[in-house]
Amino acid sequence: IKKIGVLTSGGDAPGMNACIRAVVRTGIYLGKEVVGIKQGYQGMVDRKFVNMDSHSVCNIIQLGGTILKTARCDEFRTYEGRQKAYKNLKKEGIDALVAIGGDGTFTGAELLSREFDIPVICVPGTIDNDLYGSDFTLGYDTANNTVIEAIDKIRDTAASHDRLFFIEVMGRDSGCIALWAGTAGGAEAILLPEKDTGIEDLIQKLEKGADSNKSSSIVIIAEGDKNGGAYHVAKLVKEKFQFYDIKVTILGHLQRGGSPTSFDRVLASRLGYAAVKALEAGETRKMVGIRGNRVKLTDLVESINNNSFKLEEDLMEMSTILTI
Ligand code: F6P
Image (cartoon, rainbow, N blue to C red; front, side, top):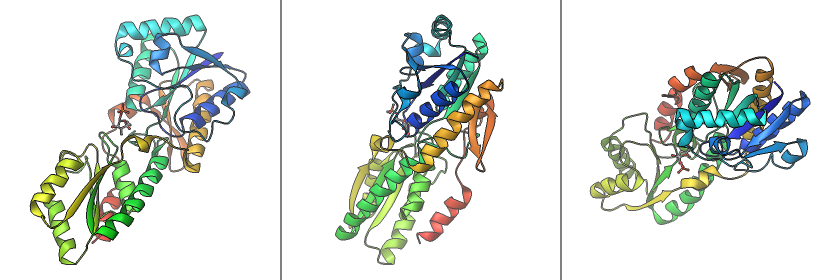
């Protein structure tokens, strides 16, 4: 391997810059050239390449977002798109890739690598933490901290006004943020896409709270929850409890930004470093992840096919008990 291409794709996540820095500096240390590919697979298709050196990744470890930018690229989903991208890589002399992103990024990387025989290592970068083969993904810890800061602030005003708040957090198919941040924020109830809790459960819980003179409550709802989103759930609950003063807050994209926590910076650095070392060791079509505080490789296909349920069962049980 002489020239490594690095890209970020899909939704941005805090820690991506720290990871780019680690890839660039490890590559250079091992005597490789490193090229940044702008806007993920779109930049591969459109030939948006930028030579990276140690200096080009100075002062970025603390930055949210991604200096390489990111995009979701429809053209790359087609064989013709990937062929065009591969030809561009060849012209540029890029002979290996590190792709940082979520399951969509992994799928693209796996196809490109298999169809055109180019080595690829992926790094799990998404605030959703929904990837198999890594206990944690880049950005998850930072997003959780952003959410608990918001919950704490909302709790101040909720308690002052005796209000019931529904807070919707990100996670298209994943309740990881909802469960973790909801637990850390002491939420009275948490609705998750992975667990089919109907509205009845929630209503019973709120009834219990009202009976024990609880005057304010916080309910966390994951974006992908099957009950129809925070506004809809709030409406259904209002029909049952006329006396509750109900408010809804959708946290949205603020969860994707911000300076990465120390955990995310270290995780990103470890995985970026490990990705380049894995390429150097002749590995391909693998994801570098962290399991039990050890860096581990997982086959990309295995990771893509298994990203269904990742919630901590004990947290689910415990958070219900602790909020009684
Ligand atoms: O996958 C990360 C994520 O933030 C999800 O939680 C969310 O559903 C989605 O991306 C939003 O995507 P976009 O920024 O394209 O609207």
